[in-house]
Length: 149
Image (cartoon, rainbow, N blue to C red):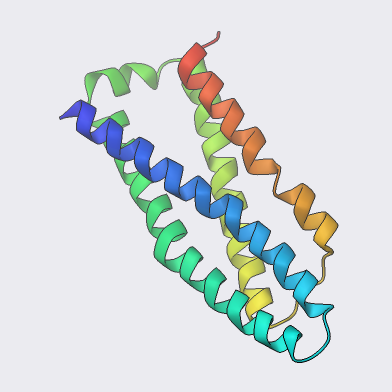
């Protein structure tokens, strides 16, 4: 059962991160669309609102919940998970995961602003903002594979 739960955890982490990467890219597209002339502006804004809504609520949110659920199962219902909780690399990984969750919730807030056409940040800001989950992903992968400390 452990291998199935671990597989499901990895699958949903991948789809969660795909959503985190793409949602911010859609924010950039929305900012660029807002600078276009009519009717392109309105057409693109409407389409991007639909795309962001579907990506966030049909893919990203469910993936984050399921990835977290299967991680919980791995950590608290398996002997190896209980042992991992005692290891420093797992503490670093869990701090990174909490940070990713904060990023996720911030993206939710930004999405709501975009849905109301109330964005206050530039496309350059969002391009840099989009690099943050990459750094967290690298940290998590290194912690899990290398298990330093």
